[in-house]
Length: 143
Image (tube, rainbow, N blue to C red; front, side, top):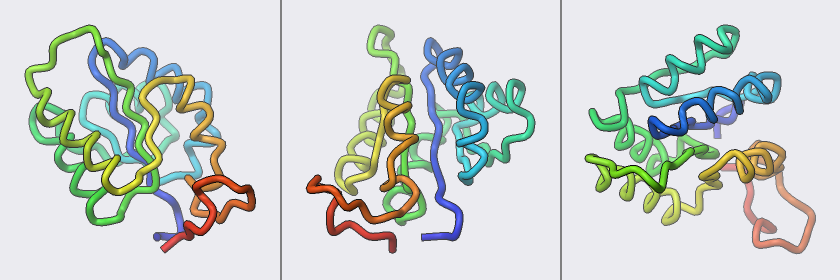
């Protein structure tokens, strides 16, 4: 793992406002991460939180979801915050499912809504620390 953990932020169109609000509320915590985002989501977050350092990838439908999926497969991410809109059809639904599948296959900490993102952002595992509880996280160490 790199010295600074990397976190990916992705949001469907109907959830971009929620992601921006999340970033505003947690700007101080997010500043401790290298952030990668899909294009439009990253642009919106930067407008609201110009002090955050964000690497913007392509828009989700243009390959951004796949770029983040590759980062998961390469072990370059420590977490994924993906605010999903379950009520709107997604023309690139196969890419969304592939991204979520990779997060599951690689046991990536992933939050799909603001409530779980709040919890995940406080996780010791997200920052690469060993946990001391008797949870499934025991035994996982930073690589």
